[in-house]
Length: 373
Picture 1 (cartoon, rainbow, N blue to C red):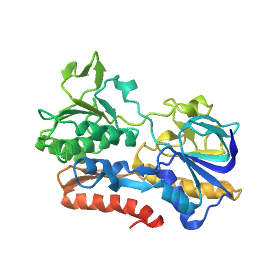
Picture 2: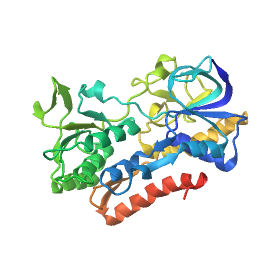
Picture 3: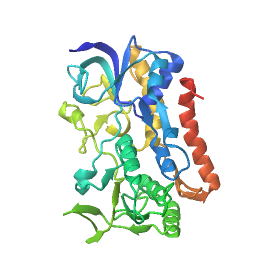
Picture 4: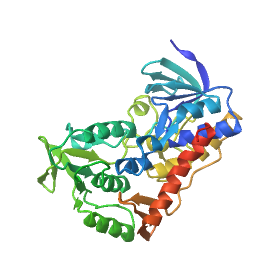
């Protein structure tokens, strides 16, 4: 059965779409009707996951109430996943609710997991994406009784992998601190960052006895291999970046070489301009925007403004231009954090307080919209 066409269909509830729902709740729904299609009634903010692991806050602290935002915005909420899209026919196939038709659509489903494809499959392997599944699997794994300290290998030396390594080393409730090894790849930790923050991260890893191997990793015949030698691990955490969902490419949308939806400076699909896309599932054709929650958050208000323009029958005009420098705040899991801003780096408890203020403030602004304390 096909539901009646919606003026707008939001596919996914990533960081950018949260900003869209908040805009509609504050300023009114610009379309006659709209639906948000997402498998979960909440969004988990990935920036607070390391703090949950190290015990800085609860598992529920980093959740945004998507159901409440949809209600406040006057938007229909359908808890389901998109399985396929026909962009020319303006319809999507969901896993549980059949076909859903639309006049305009916006896609922000986050990144897909790619660990098994890139590294090789293994029962010890947990992919950071999608983040909800990662949290569930990690909680189950860490709850199992142990006869010795857990040996954890974190594959990926980017900001996400670094924070997870620190958090896992200082896991809340562990009777013995896990032994953590970071397999950072040939480019080392924080590739693309200035030397100052990289030096601070390496020094902190040494202080915490976190082993660092600057080599690519793979899983081969049941073993985790780096530098042509086996790495002992009870748990393998893959923080290797986002993969692209298959269904946009299979539906005929224009994608880049990695399968991400190609969009213009206004977040419109290059092949189907009645569809917009943002976040980890999209790639700008005119400039490089890293797949990071920081950029998805900043793209949100731009996406909201452009959707409002489309509702009025005018051309989108807003564009997100990444700053030359991006502020990163990396928790060490021990009450401090490391700040990176271009060539500047700092470390201390005051950085951790700044991170907590930013993270909790981002969650709180959406909680206020839905009337939560």
